[in-house]
Image (cartoon, rainbow, N blue to C red; front, top):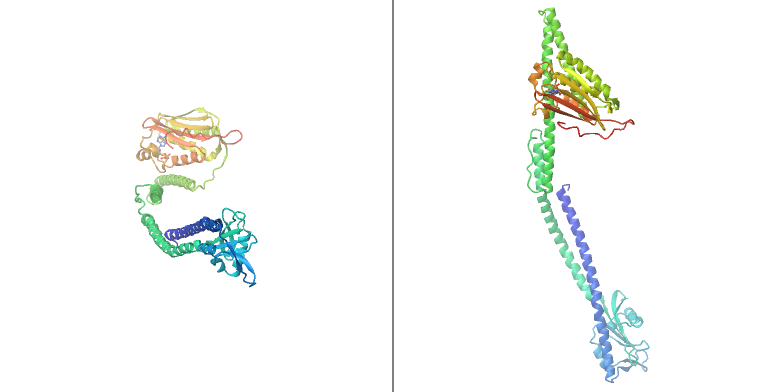
Length: 500
Ligand code: ADP
């Protein structure tokens, strides 16, 4: 029995049995307590009644005791209770013993005489030794517990002590036996009925879970990830489970789609250069092609090979970053010299393109990171700025320090990015205007900003972009700086305004 339904039913039956046992024990204890309690006034009343009979007889002047023949010595006599008083005392049902001042038994009720000699002797001992109180006390005689009430009449009486006693057994025994019998009979029936009900209820409760299992099995066959589980109104556990599973499937579906798109884009990007490469090689190998055309074809092939190598390199970088396998060096890096290097390279690239590149502000800042990757990040932004700025435009690079963070900005007066494209430019293979960038021979793969984003994040920083179509763009990277001891100061994330 491994199903939760079976386990729940067993647990429920166990709990029920435990509860029933505790209940039975509590009831039994209470009933026993009550038995003692009820007997006390009863036995006291019997003792008081016996005493009153004796006193009333004495009050009328009649003898309470008469000499009676002793059973052992036939000629001797010993005092005994008078027949008239004895007849009255016989109406008292339980154990009753009347003693004189020498502790001789004047009267013993028939139930005392019916006891076996040992019990009778023990009973009489208790009648002699128990203190005469107004209430009652408990003593054990043989196998039974007796409640005793002992009374002494005022001085001058022929009687010295009256003791009445009653067993707790007759009053409690039958009632308790009845109780136990009832419980033994009803408990198994109750248990079976409760297990059946519990099994039914558990089945009902788990019906929606079974339904969810079937649905999830149908959805996760791989082709139906767009489907979702039906969610009932009401916030019970099953509903919350369905909502959580739906959210999980949403995330799975998003990552599967991203993976599919990534693979499709990567294959597509490789297909074109491979086709060009093939055509170039065929041209170079053709015996009819003149020598100069062959050389041109080979040069084109070399260019395509370089492009493909770049693409594969970028893909590898992103794949490793995704897996978290990229070991970034962690060393103190002076951002100012890195930014100057990047500026000089971008300025050289800007010259033939007719784009003026300046660096008006450059403040000292040290970060903990990988110099090669940070240089790649700065260059990506700088090269993009030159790439997407038409002749006559300008690019401005700045490095500023604000408290615990440093910001590297690249502002251009280029073609800008539309509001619709802006939220996507950090996505892999996203190119805002594919036709234009390709035709202008600027065509990248749409991976540069995705890599820039990863580098910034891997350094605990952010990257953001602000842009207006036709007016230009500003890309800003914010990185946490380290103090002189090399500890990273409080990272300033507030710069990330526009995009990521
Ligand atoms: P690519 O290799 O195509 O430049 P990126 O990831 O570097 O890929 O950039 C993604 C897209 O963002 C580009 O295709 C371009 O449309 C847009 N973009 C990036 N930088 C700029 C910029 N400075 N000005 C205008 N558009 C830009």
